[in-house]
Image: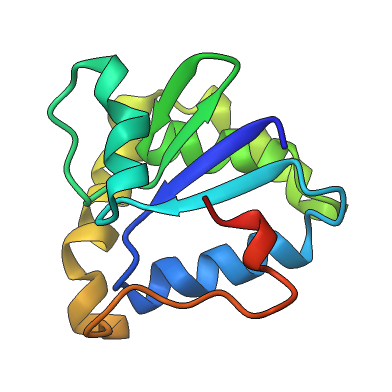
Length: 129
């Protein structure tokens, strides 16, 4: 594990994204922690930022990525064609992030949410902090 993805643990879209990443990350480069859990909060505390659960966050090599920058950085490490998504990095974040924010704002309405954070399966449990 070299990087940690922090996500909204009750969001169906976010949970599906975590499962998507796990399937394309067979070398376990990423670990995961829900933002609602104490471990997730502990991990973002050193960055002294008021970060909401409206963004996936990536902590990699001591650096915090959020919103579309986090998503693109994650894609860079996935197996298969998903690495090519990193090419969208040429689009400035002031253009990418409003699109990200629109989806984040509507994710519960479009995809629903759970009452509690997801429980990892027996096979994926070691990937969650």
